[in-house]
Length: 116
Image (cartoon, rainbow, N blue to C red; front, top):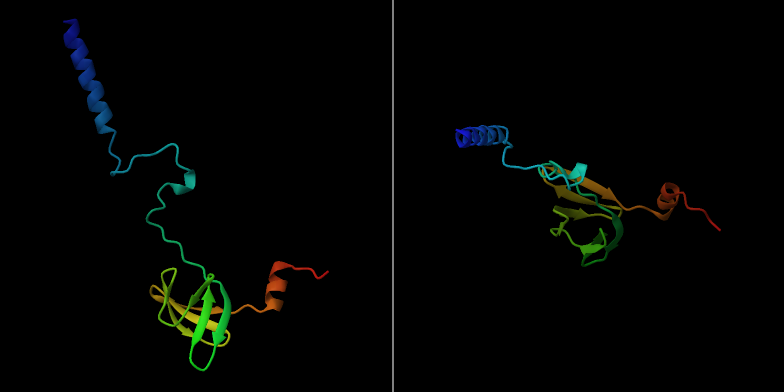
């Protein structure tokens, strides 16, 4: 009778462990950082840094995020729509973003640069 009780106890433990194990297909990993849990469905908007614009009679080139780009190119998932003398226009998903060229004075003001 002792082995019958053991089998019954093990069956009960097994039933309890599987009933509480409903986890929507994703198990918790205790070694993952706290911020990483559940971030797969969240999207982060890309940031764009416009550092230079070259406009000549035959071409227009903008340096965005360190890469030379022309109208129609894709930069970090956004399409470059137009290049003007002081800004560019990008389409990032359903929205249009205008990125302005920062002048030296704007950089100095924003970065708190000191002159020596």
